[in-house]
Every structure is written in C-alpha cells, then in structure tokens.
Picture 1 (cartoon, rainbow, N blue to C red):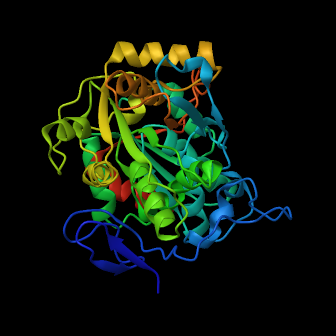
Picture 2 (picture 1 turned 135 degrees about the vertical axis):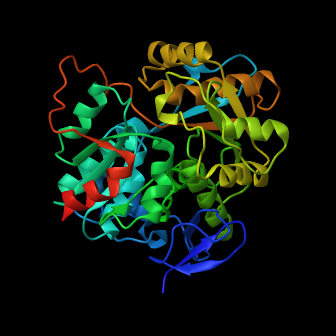
Length: 394
C-alpha cells in the first residue's frame, strides 16, 4: 500500500486518507529511491524527453495525451546575464511546458492518477494547467479563482471549458475549505502530494544534466512552498540513491511586498507566520499564508541555503533584463529568482567557481488578451462554494 509521510513528525498515512498530517504539516509520498539510477532511454522509449523518464519514482504511470508532454524543459547556461565575479548561471526554462509553467509537472502526475472530476484553487498558472489537462483527459474540472483575478487570465482558463468560479470572500481560506469539505472533486492544490511528486522532477532533470557532478545551488521563486518541497524531496531521494556528489543548496526568492517565508527566515524562525501582503506585480507568488511555508524553511535549513526578498523595482528590471539579454520572456514572479542570484553574489554567497541553476517557473508570453470572453465565469460567495461545486460536477 502506498504511504504518505509527514516530513516533520514522521507519521504515515495510506494514500487517499489525508493530504495533511494531524500535526498540521503537509504530507508527501514515501518513495524508496535507493535503487534508482539515471535511466537509459537511448532506445527511444516513451518519456525520453519528459518527466516520465523518472516513472520508477513517481506514483503514476506514463499516460497518453497532454499529460505525457510535461517536463523535459531546457537547461542552458546564460553568460549574458552573469556578472563579474558572480557564478555561472544556468536557466531552467519551465515556460515551455504545455501550458507555459512548471505547474504542468504536478498536474500531469495528478491527472494520471485521479479518476473523476479534478479541481484546484489558483490565481492563474495552476488553474490553466488543471483546466487544460482535464480537457485533454475528458474530465470535468472545477477552478476556484479570487474575485480580483484579471479578466484576461479568466479568459485563458475559460477556453478549456472548466467549471470556473470567481469566489467572493476570504480567498485564502479556500485551500482549507477544499480539504475540509467533500466537494465531489479531487483538488490538486499547490502542495497536494501528487502535485509535489510531479514537481520534484524539475530537480531530477537539473541534477541529471550535471551528473556525475551537481550544481552548487538551485534558486527558485516560492509561493505556497509546494515547488520548494518538490525540489527538496528530489534531493533527498537522489542522495538516497547515491547520485549526488554534493547536495545543492536551496535558495528561495520572494517579492518583498509579500514575503512571509523570507521574513521568518530573517528572524531565524522554523515556522512561517502569515503577513499582510501588499499588491505586487508578482501575482503568481503573492501568497501571504503559504500552506507549505514551514516545509520550505526546512528545505533551506537542511541544505544550508537561504531566502531572499526582492524589491518591486529590481524584480521588474530583472524581468526586462532576462528578455533583452537572455532572450527569455518570464512572468515577474520568475524574475525574483535571477534577481536573488545577483543579491546573493554581491553578499558573497556565490562566487565565480559556482554553478547555480535557476528555475524560471512561468512564461511571460501568456498575457495581453485585448477583448477577453469571460461569459462562462460564475460568480459565487465563498459560503456557497460547496453547493455550487457539487451541483456543477453532479
């Protein structure tokens, strides 16, 4: 029987019984990776260029359709954005996933395992990913977005014909509502065990590209903490398999206007406290109360990494620099990562002999719809969400 484990207290649960531990922390799959080795797919077998090359350490089997296409994203060195005395920077461009973000990794694994309607609570990238993958798998999808979600984003999601609800009320509580209420759909939220299992594959790909060596550090934006958890999970598994010459340090980057994980890191805390965030262009990582924030902090602590806050002006300047100097268009939420590398190099954390892999989580090409069609979006108060979702998928 497949087991889920709490990284913090070690308690285990059968898969399907819970997604969070009784202690309050999130669960992930217990994976025996001791016998794992880098796969030989030179025969052209399925998954050679996608995340499914790591099927042996995933809780799902390689599917057909859109979910088969996730992962296998480019990793290349970008000398044009390296600074004098700074590290060698290697960009992992997740924007070339099927719906333009790293979210497709977790969705692909989740949709391949879940039967029946699937849902998510998301402002954008995860909503788009779940809607598209559900459409490709002929599944019903339920998407719950915040009331201030721009119409252009709603139109991108709506084209895949999900049950799309713009929720009025305390949107931050919806994550917990989907855990506590039986809504008739399996919710693939930001740190769900299936999603983290898929998202860990980005670190597998990075480390395989450097094998038999390893990058000195992996730097990525952080919001809920789910992606950071996946990277950490991958490094733990690869260490268990004896495939890392050294463990890469994990560094996380947040927008300074909403940086609860960074604030806790600066205080030396092991627990993340919610903050009152300000509006930021980094909407994809604008998470004032991250559900896996504590696990993200644990990842940083175990790998001797750090967490960096990036001011708004620096983030937007970095987005423009990536486009003009590296030819890569990213969301502002991604640009915090390379901006953080710049700050860390200036602080002496990285030097010219270091190799730093930076995960650019989402494409910047997905915006600008001039006349969005949002006629299918249903307005609903948070208190009415359970009934509305059950009616939609029944």
